[in-house]
Length: 104
Image 1 (cartoon, rainbow, N blue to C red):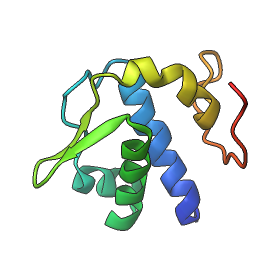
Image 2 (cartoon, rainbow, N blue to C red):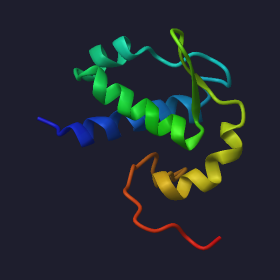
Image 3 (tube, rainbow, N blue to C red):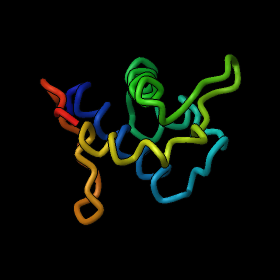
């Protein structure tokens, strides 16, 4: 069984792929927590943690009682986020922990 952390990473990878590939354009509502709970067979807390990380990074924004939506300026953030998320055009997505930020 996958740990909660691995499930969160799996969900982040899935959601980032939806955004990056254009399947979820700016201002489009993201999959509901309930849909993701069924797809990944996990608790609402794990889904909420994944969405909170994306919201913190500026990839999505939330509207109370409606859900999460793709941020309009997200594609401008891809380059800086690629460092934090380990995004590679060739390799896809790999979420990694970062202890220190680079000197840009």
